[in-house]
Amino acid sequence: MKQANIRILLVEDDADVVGMYVSRGLVDGIEFVVTANGDEAIQLVDKEQFVAAVVDLEIYGRNQGDDVIRAIRAKCKDTIIVVTTRCESDTRRNNNLKDGAVVFLRKPILYTDLKVQLDALLRLKMDIDPILEAGPVKYNTATHFLFCGNKEPEHLTDLEAAVFEHLLRRRNRPQTLAMIYAGATGEDSRSMVRSSMTRVIAVLRRKLFAFCGDEIVRTHSVREQFDGKETTYVIASPL
Image: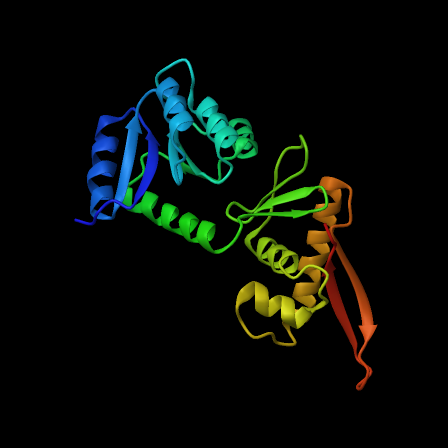
């Protein structure tokens, strides 16, 4: 058994689930701080800053899971919030995403599945900032959701998300289609991907403009100096 090295808030009223998570977590060096009550969860958040929180939306107490999520985010913007629920709705999901949740898991959830999600999110937290900003848009790299003011969040496909993140992390540095393809997919580019990548970028630009009204991604063509070929460069707009 490993010595517990991280503490995660677990807001859950199913005793069997709690027992499974707590016993398995100790083996992996995770100490779950458990409560089945939303009011008590908020009190715990007031006293301690947790690395992550796993919050069931349907719990005991005057404060429900939605209230706990808002309380966590108000106290600590860095806590990773994982939501578990049996009754997910698009409206509630979108509201929770706005309030700071990053992952939704539908019950029943095995400990191994939860651990995979937590490991990925903790690595992301240590390595890179999961929230990127571009103009009026905030982009969550963990969930692929775009946020802009009070608008409903917009979701990017996996490829759109990979392209957008690649551009944002290289903002204002011209990127050829080959560079974008390699950065987004981890593969060497081939001539056949040029047209497909052009289409992806075009769709991404239209989606971003329709969402926020700003040209977040701009494109322009320049003529290569030596062979006269046209090469498309894509630039992410500055913040």
